[in-house]
Amino acid sequence: MSTIPGFNQIQFEGFCRFIDQGLTEELYKFPKIEDTDQEIEFQLFVETYQLVEPLIKEKDAVYESLTYSSELYVSAGLIWKTSRDMQDQTIFIGNIPLMNSLGTSIINGIYRIVINQILQSPGIYYKSELTITEFRSIPAP
Image 1: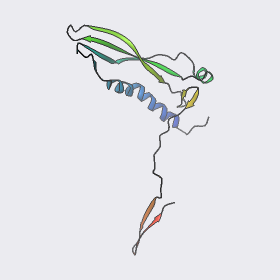
Image 2: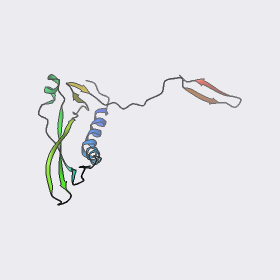
Image 3: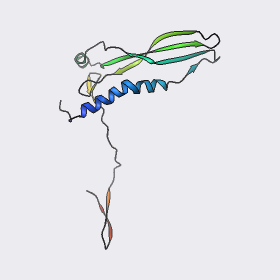
Protein backbone atom coordinates (compact mmCIF):
# COMPACT_ATOMS: atom_id res chain seq x y z
CA MET A 1 0.00 0.00 0.00
CA SER A 2 1.60 3.30 -1.04
CA THR A 3 1.06 6.38 1.06
CA ILE A 4 1.49 10.10 0.64
CA PRO A 5 4.49 11.28 2.70
CA GLY A 6 3.26 12.46 6.10
CA PHE A 7 -0.36 11.72 5.23
CA ASN A 8 -0.72 8.85 7.67
CA GLN A 9 0.77 11.00 10.44
CA ILE A 10 -1.77 13.78 9.80
CA GLN A 11 -4.64 11.27 9.88
CA PHE A 12 -3.35 9.56 13.02
CA GLU A 13 -2.83 12.85 14.89
CA GLY A 14 -6.39 13.90 14.06
CA PHE A 15 -7.75 10.60 15.32
CA CYS A 16 -5.75 10.85 18.56
CA ARG A 17 -7.06 14.40 19.07
CA PHE A 18 -10.61 13.07 18.62
CA ILE A 19 -10.06 10.31 21.20
CA ASP A 20 -8.36 12.66 23.70
CA GLN A 21 -10.55 15.77 23.34
CA GLY A 22 -13.28 15.49 20.72
CA LEU A 23 -15.00 12.46 22.21
CA THR A 24 -15.37 14.20 25.57
CA GLU A 25 -16.66 17.36 23.86
CA GLU A 26 -19.28 15.38 21.94
CA LEU A 27 -20.41 13.48 25.03
CA TYR A 28 -20.86 16.81 26.88
CA LYS A 29 -23.40 17.75 24.19
CA PHE A 30 -25.58 14.79 25.21
CA PRO A 31 -28.90 16.30 26.35
CA LYS A 32 -30.14 16.09 29.91
CA ILE A 33 -32.92 13.53 30.23
CA GLU A 34 -35.70 13.86 32.81
CA ASP A 35 -38.82 11.81 33.37
CA THR A 36 -42.21 13.40 32.69
CA ASP A 37 -42.86 13.93 36.40
CA GLN A 38 -39.42 15.56 36.69
CA GLU A 39 -38.52 13.43 39.69
CA ILE A 40 -35.61 11.52 38.13
CA GLU A 41 -32.74 12.87 36.03
CA PHE A 42 -30.32 10.86 33.85
CA GLN A 43 -26.77 12.20 33.70
CA LEU A 44 -23.58 11.08 31.92
CA PHE A 45 -20.23 11.44 33.68
CA VAL A 46 -18.10 11.86 30.57
CA GLU A 47 -14.82 12.36 32.41
CA THR A 48 -14.74 8.63 33.15
CA TYR A 49 -15.33 7.14 29.70
CA GLN A 50 -13.55 3.92 28.76
CA LEU A 51 -12.48 2.46 25.43
CA VAL A 52 -12.10 -1.30 25.74
CA GLU A 53 -9.31 -3.21 24.02
CA PRO A 54 -10.66 -4.74 20.76
CA LEU A 55 -11.64 -8.40 21.01
CA ILE A 56 -10.04 -9.21 17.63
CA LYS A 57 -6.79 -8.31 15.90
CA GLU A 58 -6.56 -6.13 12.80
CA LYS A 59 -5.74 -9.00 10.44
CA ASP A 60 -8.62 -11.10 11.83
CA ALA A 61 -11.02 -8.21 11.18
CA VAL A 62 -9.92 -8.18 7.53
CA TYR A 63 -10.18 -11.95 7.08
CA GLU A 64 -13.57 -12.19 8.81
CA SER A 65 -15.02 -9.01 7.22
CA LEU A 66 -15.48 -7.33 10.59
CA THR A 67 -14.91 -3.81 11.87
CA TYR A 68 -11.79 -3.25 13.96
CA SER A 69 -13.28 -1.18 16.76
CA SER A 70 -13.33 -0.51 20.46
CA GLU A 71 -16.40 -0.48 22.70
CA LEU A 72 -17.15 2.87 24.38
CA TYR A 73 -18.47 2.80 27.95
CA VAL A 74 -19.48 5.83 30.02
CA SER A 75 -20.45 6.15 33.67
CA ALA A 76 -24.01 7.34 34.09
CA GLY A 77 -26.30 8.01 36.97
CA LEU A 78 -29.98 8.19 37.78
CA ILE A 79 -30.57 11.01 40.25
CA TRP A 80 -33.76 11.20 42.31
CA LYS A 81 -34.43 14.90 42.78
CA THR A 82 -36.52 14.55 45.94
CA SER A 83 -33.94 12.63 47.98
CA ARG A 84 -30.78 13.39 45.90
CA ASP A 85 -30.02 9.66 45.90
CA MET A 86 -28.04 8.43 42.94
CA GLN A 87 -27.68 5.07 41.23
CA ASP A 88 -24.39 4.71 39.29
CA GLN A 89 -23.97 2.39 36.34
CA THR A 90 -21.54 1.98 33.46
CA ILE A 91 -23.40 1.96 30.15
CA PHE A 92 -22.42 0.92 26.62
CA ILE A 93 -22.61 3.84 24.17
CA GLY A 94 -21.37 2.21 20.96
CA ASN A 95 -18.36 1.05 18.96
CA ILE A 96 -15.63 3.44 17.81
CA PRO A 97 -13.64 2.27 14.74
CA LEU A 98 -9.93 2.41 15.53
CA MET A 99 -7.20 3.75 13.29
CA ASN A 100 -4.00 1.83 12.64
CA SER A 101 -0.50 3.27 12.20
CA LEU A 102 -1.08 3.67 8.44
CA GLY A 103 -3.92 6.14 9.09
CA THR A 104 -6.62 3.70 7.95
CA SER A 105 -9.60 2.09 9.67
CA ILE A 106 -10.96 -1.38 8.97
CA ILE A 107 -14.71 -1.27 8.34
CA ASN A 108 -16.44 -4.55 7.46
CA GLY A 109 -13.05 -6.04 6.61
CA ILE A 110 -12.09 -3.27 4.18
CA TYR A 111 -9.39 -0.66 4.76
CA ARG A 112 -10.98 2.80 4.73
CA ILE A 113 -9.44 6.23 4.85
CA VAL A 114 -10.85 9.70 5.44
CA ILE A 115 -9.95 12.16 2.69
CA ASN A 116 -10.42 15.88 3.11
CA GLN A 117 -11.17 17.66 -0.11
CA ILE A 118 -12.05 21.10 -1.37
CA LEU A 119 -15.29 21.12 -3.30
CA GLN A 120 -15.41 23.22 -6.44
CA SER A 121 -18.59 23.95 -8.31
CA PRO A 122 -18.67 22.67 -11.88
CA GLY A 123 -18.55 25.23 -14.65
CA ILE A 124 -16.13 27.57 -16.37
CA TYR A 125 -13.61 29.48 -14.31
CA TYR A 126 -12.42 32.84 -15.56
CA LYS A 127 -9.37 34.85 -14.74
CA SER A 128 -9.16 38.55 -15.33
CA GLU A 129 -6.28 40.40 -16.93
CA LEU A 130 -5.87 44.11 -16.71
CA THR A 131 -3.62 45.83 -19.23
CA ILE A 132 -2.98 49.50 -19.71
CA THR A 133 -5.28 49.75 -22.74
CA GLU A 134 -8.06 47.23 -22.06
CA PHE A 135 -9.71 44.84 -19.62
CA ARG A 136 -10.56 41.36 -20.84
CA SER A 137 -11.85 38.17 -19.30
CA ILE A 138 -10.64 34.86 -20.68
CA PRO A 139 -11.50 31.26 -19.79
CA ALA A 140 -9.04 29.82 -17.31
CA PRO A 141 -7.25 26.58 -18.18
